[in-house]
Amino acid sequence: MKSFFTQGVAVLFEQVPTLDVIEAVLGRVVLKRNEVGTAMFSGPSLLVGFRPEVNGLIQIDIVDRPWPDDMGSPNGDPELFAAWSMGHFGPFTYPGNLERACSSATKWQDGSRAAVARHRAFVRIRLSYVFGAAEDSLTRPADCDPAAELVAVTEMAGLIGRASGALAYFNPNAEVIMPPGELAETITFAAAHSRIPIEAWAQVRIVNLDGMADGWMMMDTVGLAQLDLPDFEAVFPAGRFDPNAVYMCLLNLGLYVAGAGDVFEEGHTTEGPSGSLLRTRRFEQALMAPPRPTVRLFDDEVRKTPKKLLAKAFGAPS
Image 1 (cartoon, rainbow, N blue to C red):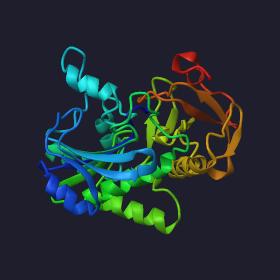
Image 2 (cartoon, rainbow, N blue to C red; image 1 turned 90 degrees about the horizontal axis):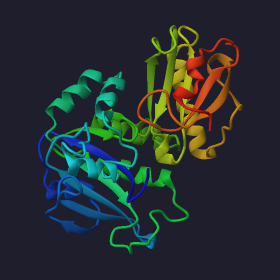
Image 3 (cartoon, helix red, strand yellow; image 1 turned 60 degrees about the vertical axis):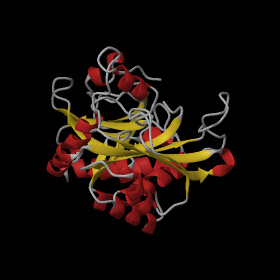
C-alpha cells in the first residue's frame, strides 16, 4: 500500500558506497544531505527534487547491510519489521521477493544469484510527497502520475548503477532484478520506442500448477500495482500456448493498461496468443505470492477449467 513512499527501487552494491560517489554519478542538484541515519528507516541520504510544486522529493539513502529478504518479525527483528510494514522498502515489497526475483530472472538466473551472494549493501531510491510536510498532508497529490514517478526513480537507479561496485538493479515491488547494463539498455530502448520501460517495472513469471491444478500452467505479472493497477494471471493447460507468446501477451497487456487504465471488468474478453480469446475474472488475491489483486485470464475454448482456479479459496471475484 502506498503511504509515506509512493515508489521505491534499489541498487545492490558489492561494498558500501559513499554519499560523494552517489552524488557524483547523479549529476543532479542535491537539496539536502544527511550524513547519518537509522539503516532500516533511512541511512545516510541525499534529497533531490521531483515535483517541487507539490513537495515531490526523491530520497537516495545508503543501507550498510545486505537486502533483508525476510523483512523481520515483531519478536525477532522489530525495527526491520516496522520499517517494512510502513513501506520503507517499497510500497508493495513482500517477504521473499529477492529470492523470487532471482528465480524468475530466466536470462540472468545464475548471474542474479551471484550478485545477491556478493552484495554487502544497497542504495534505496524512494519518492515521497510528505518530507517535512504537515501531519495532515496528502500522501499523494490529486494529479499524481505513477508512471512519471517510476520513470524518475528508474532513471535515477540507472545513474546509480554506473557507480563502482554496483551489481544489480532491484525493483522489490515488481520482483525484477537485472544487471545495471541491462537496465540502461531497457531505459534507452523504451525511450526510443516512446513507451514506458515496463520490463524494469513488471516481472512476467511462469508457474507449473501441478498440485493445485494438474496439467495446468500459469503465467502472471508482478508489479502493476506500482501503476495503481491489478496484475494479470493467465491460466491454461500445459502445451496449449507457447510460453513466449504468453509472455508477450502479458507484457503488451501491461503496456496497454498503463495507458488506458484499469479497464478490464468481470467477463470482458481480450485477444490472447495465436488469436485465442481470453475471458477475464477479477480476484482480490492472486494464486501465488505476493498478495495482490489480479485480473485472471481464461481461454474461452477450454471448457473444463479446474475448480481450484475459480474457487474462493484462491480469491473470491471482486
